[in-house]
Image 1 (spheres, helix red, strand yellow):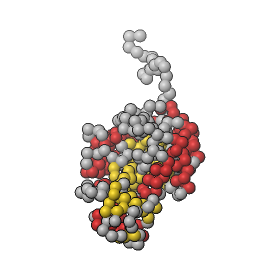
Image 2 (spheres, chains in turn cyan, green; image 1 turned 90 degrees about the vertical axis):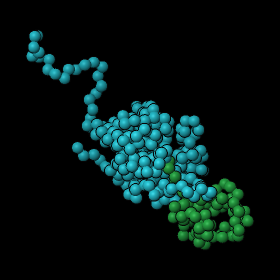
Image 3 (cartoon, helix red, strand yellow; image 1 turned 45 degrees about the vertical axis):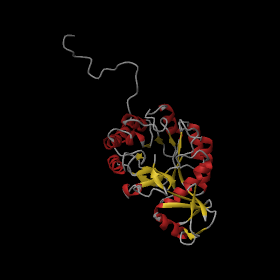
Image 4 (cartoon, chains in turn blue, brown; image 1 turned 30 degrees about the vertical axis):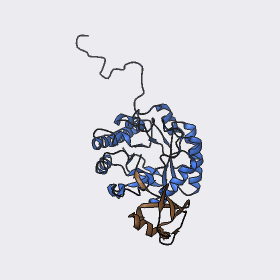
Length: 258
Length: 66
């Protein structure tokens, strides 16, 4: 069965799994996990260089050069900060792409959609390819698309929570309404969560903690690779409907003793 | 002379170019982005941009993140 290609802003990806670079026990483990995941795009954060401590290894030395870097604006609570960070990320990196985050609350890390939509508009006008991290609100996703976002990235559950897909029907609705790719980003905990996201019709899944925080990150990365492939294939295969009662799989006639 | 570097007061002996400062700090210019007085400056201008007394500098790079 052939699938339609996974294309974001004119760029084709063979893998529908996007992973992060944060929270790994070491850069070496991160590199192995990336390889096991098959991901072709990874997120990175933009932070001040540590002037006093120059001993830390450079993250970039451990990211395969064929992998596409997607800078994020994590930690930004206003549109201005996110715009500023996005611009710095563009200058430090090799592309116009940005995973745009404008956070509304410290405990939940839920997005401030109002500021996010405004920042999307500004950055799109400034030539950025914007992939905004948002929540499972189909109206917010529509507004982000109208503002020029190249994809929408609704969360499954709070960042790092591992709760999985909290509102499956909303993710399904977002996919139905959107003309741009839908990437479920945040909250994935284990392989079945990623598979479910894909079964709901998501075009891709983005995760960090689910892999980096697993006891065996490299094995989990491989599990996630299979989960995304399995979920996508299941989605394309047209699943059976859900029924309230049983329908036998074996013939009803010819049973011995009847 | 004093500048603000990544949010902290930083002492410089004399005005110098961004390139000279990066060399002094042992920072690879290819892996950073720099804001000089709130303006993002392009890498090719690092040798020409002069850092003076009271200037504010932000030097950022990519780190791990989700």
